[in-house]
Image 1 (cartoon, rainbow, N blue to C red):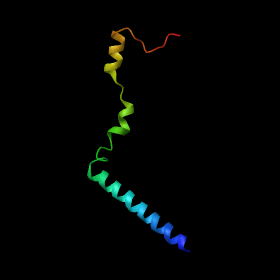
Image 2 (cartoon, helix red, strand yellow; image 1 turned 90 degrees about the vertical axis):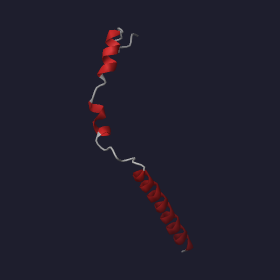
Image 3 (cartoon, rainbow, N blue to C red; image 1 turned 60 degrees about the horizontal axis):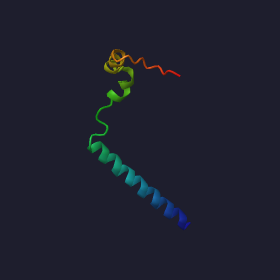
Image 4 (spheres, rainbow, N blue to C red; image 1 turned 120 degrees about the horizontal axis):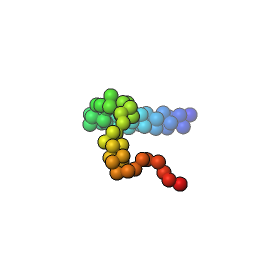
Length: 63
C-alpha cells in the first residue's frame, strides 16, 4: 500500500515538472509560428537548384 503513495507522489511530481517546462516554452515563444514548419517542405529551394545547374552539377551521382 505504501508503494502506491510513492508512485502517486512521483507521478504528480513528474507531471508538475512537465507542466513547468511546457509553460516556460510557451512563455519563450517556442510555439508562436505554427504555419511555416508545416508548409516548408512544399517550397523548393530554387536558388540552390539554379546554382547547381550553372556549376554543371546535375545532382545525380556517377557510379
